[in-house]
Amino acid sequence: MIRALLAVLVLCCAVPAAAVECRNISHDSLRYVLCEADASEDLRLFLNGTDGKVLGQFGAVDQMLTDRGKKLAFAMNAGMYHSDRSPVGHYVENGESQKQVIPNAGPGNFGLLPNGVFCIRPNRADVIETLAYLEQTPDCQFATQSGPMLVIDGKLHPRFLPDSTSRYIRNGVGTSADGKRVAFVLSRQPVTFHEFARLFRNGLGLPNALYFDGNISRIYAPQIGRNDSGFSLGPIVGVVVDTGN
Image 1 (cartoon, rainbow, N blue to C red):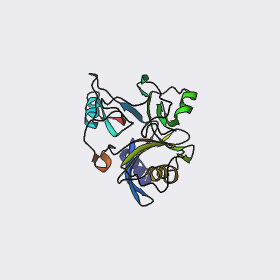
Image 2: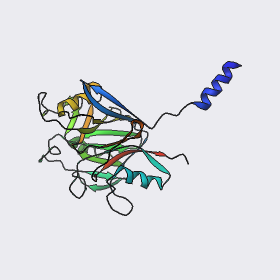
Image 3: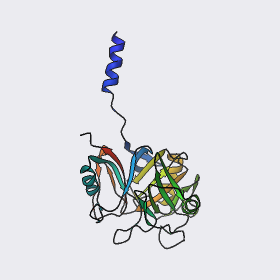
Image 4: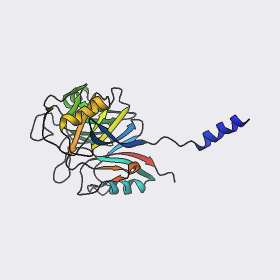
């Protein structure tokens, strides 16, 4: 009888799993913020509000969601953008393509091929190298192109140097081979591309990972007290949950 009562109490009082789990971690003596989510969660990209103006801030995204009975559980800047905050590369929001894929090499980190696309589909999210993305033509509900790729099918980007001295605060995303596990990472100290890529491959065991940006990298992770602010951002990725009201 006592055991039955205890079982009922456990069922009644169990805390539901969070939509995203954020924590501070270290790898190779370097410090990072890691936020992991299952691809079955409500993952979205945000750029413009209902008025057509760039949202630009985590707070603006959250306010827009609040008006619809939802809220942000996590958010991060998600890809490079121009001075008007428009995406540099391919961008899809709510199934509508707003900018086509850029397959060619170019200046800056974005054009350091191979680059890639973060593609969100129902119950699946994948980092896909750009040429493979063009070949596969996946039906992404949301997509953002950025570069360079950090990890490509288990291998580090061929241009990354182990002894590089170029260090920045960096952020990016990695996905599992089955598309179910999504890991968003922001470095808590300046790191090289090689160090950042090793975290995804060696530390997190993810076969594909994509660089979002550096230096301007920001995160909204209320679980660990992070709500970074600053100048307006371009594309933002977030995990959306109901407010419970």
